[in-house]
Length: 398
Image (cartoon, rainbow, N blue to C red; front, side, top):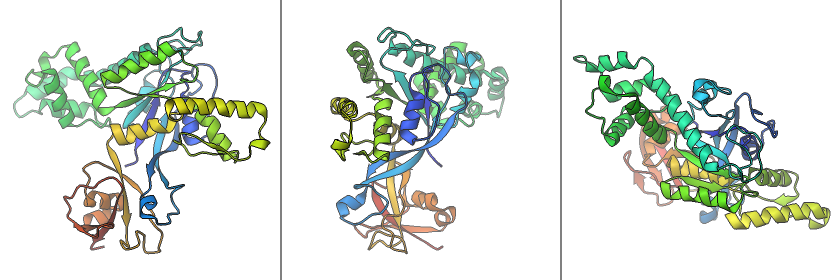
C-alpha cells in the first residue's frame, strides 16, 4: 500500500506552494481563498541515507548518498470553519482526506490571513486558532460519520449475540483506517468501555471521535511563511511542542525557489539539504544573489526550508516506517542483473522478512522460506524484526 499524506489547512495558507515545492507539479498558486478547487495528487519523496554510502559501493539509485523514496501527497481544498456542515467547499474535501494516513497541516505562521483565508496585516491573526479549527473540523466530520444510524447500531450491540461495541464503532469508520483495537483503546482511555452504546451522550461520541482522529490521522504542523512571521507567532507555535505536537518551521516559497534554481542548474541543492552551492556566481544578478543569501540565512536559522523535514517527520516519526532493501545477490547487494540496491521499500517498524517479501510480490510472500541479512550473511526467520536500512535477500520456493 502506498503511503498517502494529506495537505490540509485553511485557504491561502500556502498549501499549493508547499505541494508544488514538494512535488514540482504544475498547480495554480494565487493569493486568494479556494485556489485549489479539486484535490491535487502528486508524488513526493522521503529522504533517507542510502546504505551504499557506508558500504562504499556504487548505487545508481541514490544521489550523493541519499535515497529518495516516493510517497503520495494529496493537496485538498482549503477548509473553513463549519466545513463539516457544508460551509465553503464542505464535506467533499474532508472526504478527500479519508484515504490519507496522516496530515501535514500547513499553517500561516505569519498571521497574515484570517480564519477563512482572507488577507489581513501580518501578525494580526493568531495561528493557534487555525490549529484548533482544523482539528475541530476533522473531529466533527468523524462525529457525523459515527452518529449516522447510531441508535440502530447501539441497539444491535445490546442484543444477545450482537456485535462488540468496539467492532460496531470500527465498522462505522470503514475506510478511515480505524480498527477494533483502536476503538477499544480509545474507549478505555475515555472510561467508556463499560457504558452501553445506547446510553452514550453526544459528548461521549464527540470525545471518542476526537481521540480516534488523533490516532488515525496524526499530523505535523508545517509553520509555513516562517520567513515573514513575527517572533511572537513563532513563540506561540513553539509552545505546542510541549503539548505533544510536531511543529516544523518552514518556507514553502523558499523551497520552491531552490527547487527551481536547482532544476535550472543555477545551484546544487537536494530537498532537505541545510545549505546549497551556487554553481556560477558570476552569472547571477545582484538581486538574485541577494535573494539566495536571504534564503540561506533562513536555512541556517531553521536547519533548512522545512518542507522535506515535514514529509520525513510524518513517515518516519508519526507513522513509524523504516526503509528496507530487498536484493537477490547478497554478496554484491544487487539483483540478478547486478543493479546495486535496486529497490527501497517503506515498511512499518516491527515488520519481518516475510512482510518485506509480500511488499515485493504476493507470490513471494506466500512462498517465503527465510531471509538473509546481506551484511552479516546470517539467516533470518519469519519472526525476525527488520531494522532501518536492512538489506535482505528473500529466499522462497518461487
